[in-house]
Amino acid sequence: MMRHPRVLLSLLPLLIPFAAIFLGGIIITVLQSLGILMFSYHYDDIFFGYRELLADRWFVESALFSLYVAATATTIAIIFGTLFAYLIWRLPHRYHGRTVIYKVPLILPHIAVGFMAVILLAKTGVLAALSYQLGLIDSFTQFPDLLYRASGIDIIGAYVYKETPFVMVLVYAMLSRFESRLMDCAKMLGASPTRIFFTLILPFLMPAINTSFIILFIFSFGGFDLPFVLGDSYPGMISIRIYDYFFHKDLALRPVAMAMLTLIFLMSLGFIIAYLKIAGKMMPAARKL
Amino acid sequence: MFLRVASVSKQYRGQKVLDDISFPVRQGELVSLIGPSGAGKTTLLKIIAGLELPDSGSVKSTADLCANPAILVFQDYLLFPAMTVFNNVAYGLKCRGVKGTALTEKVSAMLAYFQLTDKSRHYPRQLSAGQQQRVALARAMVVNPSLLLLDEPFANLDRNLKAETAEFIKTFQKEYGITAISVTHDLQEAFIMSDKIGIMLDGRLHQFDTVKNVYNYPASGRVAAFLGHVNHIPASYFPLLGLDQHNGAVTVRAEAITLAHHENGVGEITEVQFAGHHVIYRVRVKELVLTVYSLDPGFSREERVDITITHTIANGDH
Image 1 (cartoon, rainbow over the protein chains, first blue to last red):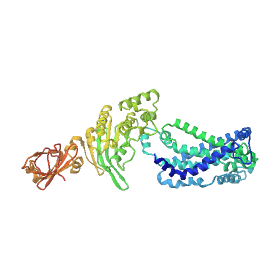
Image 2: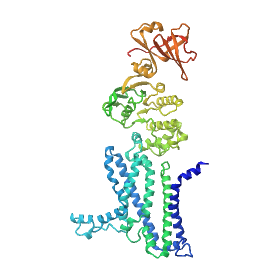
Image 3: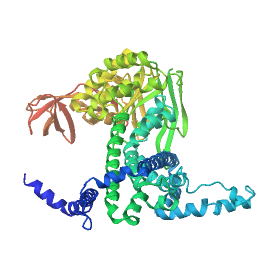
Image 4: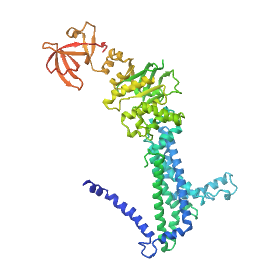
């Protein structure tokens, strides 16, 4: 019994910032979404923020668009990252060091990737100029619209570029702990390389894949900088709408921004629970995280 | 001849791991290669399994290894951790396109034979070492391999389970009529289950023969010493110990000497060690010290004893 208070005491340096910043932040956000702790204004209706939010016809579209962008970008990054990490792992060991170049996008800030995309892909960008010089297009206007698309392809592309190396790092680290004799064993039993990948390697990688999926999905779901630089105005990612409500609109509408924040937190939480349940059902024996 | 290993050699980083290994294996035989750790046994097994290539030499078989492959059961079993016992055993069949009822029937029969029916839904981490080994054997046997290769089958088992497992392996090997090669450093278990034994020391096969011949007629002093403690008796002691006249010396196992109480006996007990199921005595005869394993704990230090040698194993080449 005496050990518990001691353990609690030793964890305090971690618990205090966690409680103050994370839980405190959530509590204040929820309270402000209900019009509480809004010192300049008084709201008779505590659900004012939520009613306004539901009346905003773009909100649902923004939320769905964010969900689509995050899910698509993360899924593609997971597939690419896992496959690339696997291919590197299968290379003779002496080549592994040379593949370090794949980590470059990791050190680039998201905003830098955003501007790189603009410089490269805009109608007046590097690729357009190159295509013109090579005679592939007759004028810059013929270069396809790749940026500010309602399909979000530019944001998805930038997220995939940024997130793929992250997946590769986690998956490769996991692969380096894989018992490669299991592959010998499966091969002796007659398994093809594809079967070995799907029946042995993928279940082993699931903790890394699940962890990266959750981290990257939530990050891109609520991400601000890439949608801000590359995104179309409407419906726009939900983070942009929150930013607008918080800074650009009437101060009295701040509970709406807080209600949106509360909802994306709940959606993220719901997503993690749903994802882990589905992942658990698909591969019951694989460790989840 | 079912399988012939011919002049196989292998080096790692300039160091010879296998040096000109040759031996034949008949259909349905169980052969054990015995040697200390680092003798190159597992490398040889991997070469026979096709997982590694020899630097020189060859492994030839009359079996169709494509239709019925050689399967190696690893020392640590290497069960697929994310699969149940059933799916582990079913793996090789699924790779061959077996499905539905045929799959279930074959796997269930194998699980029943290896006494694993009640464990079919368990995962490898939920099994004991002995159960894991049986899953690995069932997983190998279900694909009807032409050759079963066992890498240290007793290494991860409790002592009391080793002999039982050796008997079990021998039983199922004979019942299925499968040819098997095992590598191990567990002498007793190898003796129990094997038809033939090869003694590997420092990457070389020093002797390959039936179990009894290897034990009773070791090819060299090193082989004899590896199989158990031996005493080297010079010819000058033969009259004292009641041995027929020989040239040179004889080698005598510690358990091939019997002692008898006698106050004017030729030997004197100098040391007594209790070793569980036998007692180790050191007996001095003039300048010679003999080691004797006896079931009789009734001798004590400084006691004089008569010595009878029941069996000699070789003329000394040591």
